[in-house]
Image (cartoon, rainbow, N blue to C red; front, side):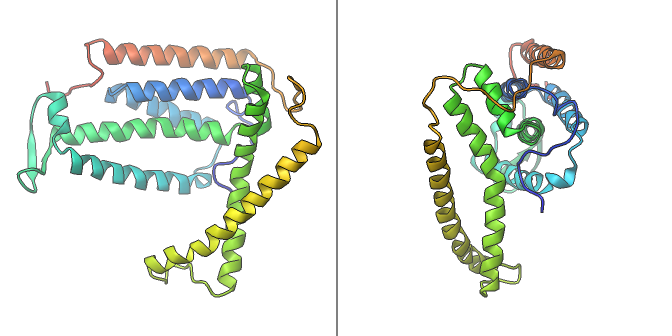
Length: 275
C-alpha cells in the first residue's frame, strides 16, 4: 500500500543532498516563484522543477493523487478569480482584447486569461520542489539538519514527528475505512455524495481519537526518556554538508537572482505580452 506525502527511499542525487540544503532550496524557490509574475521566468523554473523531479527517480504514480487534488484546487482558484475580478488582467496590463462575453460584467479577455494562467503557473512552479522536499527527505535526517541551522532541537524533533505521522494517519484512515465498510457503512461511489459525506464522520471521529491516543503514547515515551532535559543532543541520522550541497545552493541562489533581475528589469514584475 503506497502512502501519500511521505519519504520515499531511493538512491538519487536529490536524496543524497543534506536536509538543510533542501530546505533552503525549497524556501528560496518558493519565495522567488511567489514574487515573480513573469510567465517566461516561471516557465523556465517549471521546466527545471520537473527535470529535478525526474532526476529524483520518484514515479508519477506515487504522487498522482496529490497532483490531481492540487489540479482540482487550482481549477477552483481559476474560476474564483474570474468570478470576483473578471477584469483584473485588463487593469494590470492596461489593454483590452475582448474574446467573448457572458454578460456586461463577465467578459472574457485575452489579458484576463493570460493573468490567470500565469497565477496557475506560479502554483505549478512551486509544487514539484515542495513535493521533492517532502518525498526525498528522511524525517530524522531533516531534524538533524535543522539542528545544524541552530533551530532548537525540540522544534526539529517536532517537525520530524509531524513528517513521520503523515503516512501513519493515512494507514489509520484506510484501516478505519475498511472496518466501517465491513459494518455496512457505504463509502463507495454508488452512494449519493451527501450520504458519503455524512458517512465520512464515522471515519473521522475514530481517526481523531486514535490520533490523540497516539500523541499520548509518544509524549509519555519521550517523558520517560527525559526528552528535553539537556540543551543539546546528538543525532543518529546525520548527513554531512558536502560539495554537492554547496553546488546546489550556488545554483539556486544564482537562479533566483537571475529570475528576479529578469522579472524587474523593466520596472514591473508582470510580463506584458500585449504592449
